[in-house]
Structure formats: C-alpha cells, structure tokens
Length: 261
Image (cartoon, rainbow, N blue to C red; front, side):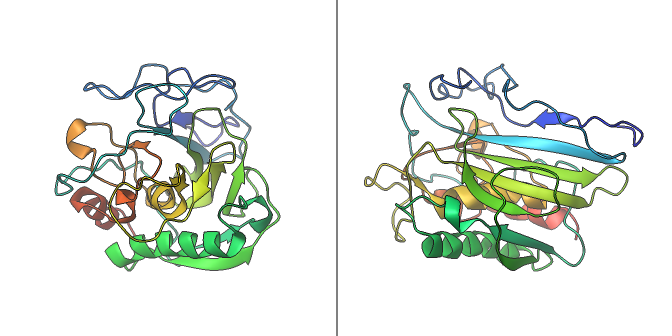
C-alpha cells in the first residue's frame, strides 16, 4: 500500500466459514487449505496514518461439528520445514507488551495468565535470542486499536474465532509499530499443567498454547494450512485441550530465524 493512502489493507490471514456474529464455529479444514470465505463483516478497515499497513490474523478451531472447541490431535511430525513470513519484523530493541488483568477469565486468574503469556513469549526468544519481548506490566486497554500499546486482552471478537491478532507496521521498513492480541472471552479458557498434547479436562483453550501461536504473528509469521504443517505451532487451526503449540516445530524455528532482527 502506498504511504499516502489513509486506509489500511485488511489482510485477514485465515479463511472463515460460517463464523460471523451469532454463527457456529468453523468447519473442518480441507486438504486444499482454509475455507473460501475470507472476511469477517465486523472486522472493517479503520483509517491509519500514511505509511502504515495492517494485517489481521484470526485463529479458528479445527472442528468437525458446530459448537465444538476443536478436535485435538497428537503430534506425529513437527519436523516439516514449512513457514510463511508476512513481511514485517520486530524493532531491533525488542517490543514491550502489556496485559489487561481485568479482562482475564476467572477460570484462569490474572497471575496465571501473566505467567502463561510470559512463557509463550519466552518460547520464541529461546528459538531466536534476537526476538526480545519486554514485560511492561498492566494496561487498561480493552480492545485492539492503534495506540502504540501492545496489548493482550480478553474481549469480544467475531463468533467462532479463538483469538485475533492485529499487526500494524510501517510499510517502507516493515518494522512493527503496534500489535494487539485479543482472546475470545466467549469461550472457556484454562492453564493446563504440562502433559500430553491433548488434555481431556477441562474442555477449554490453553492460554499458553494459543498465545505461542498468536505471538508468532508478532514476530512476522503468517498462518499455515497444509496438512503436512498440522503439527507446527503456526498451523492456522487450534483446539480445546491442545498443548502441542507450546513447543515449536522445525518450520516455526526456521521462520523465526529467517526474519530480522
């Protein structure tokens, strides 16, 4: 997008099935990739300053029936070297993040959520020490907007989405200017203890598991939809009780190392 344009390019980086507000959860992913519907009607473009672009990533459940949190599958092969880069990168000095504790579900608790979020960021730093994330403490921000507060909150996002990440970056340099992740407050959340890839109880999304995927977008990753990438962290579908995204696969690490800084 040319720098003189005042409108963002809304890059909805996953596909969407019948998941508009009031709709059911996403349908089963197919071999050809995500479903064809590519826009949420309630994620409309907003004006941005000249020279800035935005991408919006919507994480969907891998599900086989409406109203289901997704079908968790155990890791078979996370050694595939697949990744997609979006064209942006973190600032050289790293990026400061903040969490809104007042939005955290009571099933998780603010302290546990903060720990899980910090651990998710640490996973990417372990893959590439140039990926620096600075804990900025708390914020009162409740929604995603261009305010240069890199916020992590629970809020109302399009029905059917697990989480939505907005990445705003400077078009000429590709450096991230502002990024937010909003977890869907409509659905159950938990912090699971370490264990198998698929947990039976509670029927909830694991904060750290989903957060590691979302923060891959912060550093420059896009989503993957091939069947060979289904065991990688950046695979575009998630599930309740899933823990395998906490651990990066070969493609996740390769992508992290491929993008500066």
